[in-house]
Image (cartoon, rainbow, N blue to C red; front, top):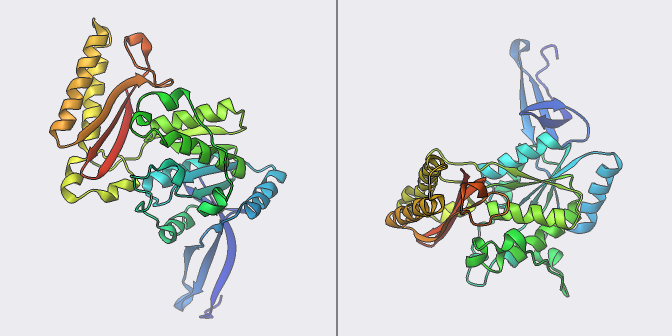
Length: 336
């Protein structure tokens, strides 16, 4: 640049793989700004551009068909928006598996009961797009309710198996029908090779995995470990509802899960196992209620089928909890 003070902008495409950027064609765009400074010094600044947003099925399918024609693998991260570090962990996991990355943002009314928080659920599209701009996302699928459920829509998926395990379904009987229907639509619309779901919603993960297997959908459902705050609280968009005093109590759920897990591991060879296991779970539930939560359930279940555990042979075990504090309902789970 020879001392010329003019700034030069070079358009490039950037792919993020394994946590670093590589120059490549066909990825989400960014701009590399190279400015000439006094004495010939230069500085480079990577300025991420927002991902492309589509709101109707036709342009989504055109994009997917183009990628498929080029034999490019596609990963989908389904979300309801209000993105946090847990969602971004799903995006990073997706990027490690596929060249093309789609993030869906859709607050699905079919999974909310009339008394639940559909109207007040956080909707933060601008900040969501800003976060995704840093993640080399190729496309954001952000349909309206009318695009997903147009007039005359009359088909729904009614899942069984893990969807009827007596956990979330017992307290939210509408929930998994709404989840299965919207996820089925998303998988057909986006035609991904991989779809990423967080382990925090563990029963949902098992329902979606069963759905894809039972309907012979050509997609691998990938579970991604729960992301937590330093004090153990699982990240959730609904954490924003917690008051300061409720937030201070909220990590109790994870602490009790960890305590129960350690106790269950210690009794693995003791008899009568079923009675001892039930005692550990009952004591854990009592501890949660003493902290100020209203407990919906604390259960030890088979990690794959979600069936109840009566003996050590019924494992591997997953501990799952749901409880309310104030107006906020929190869920969590861990492996034993």
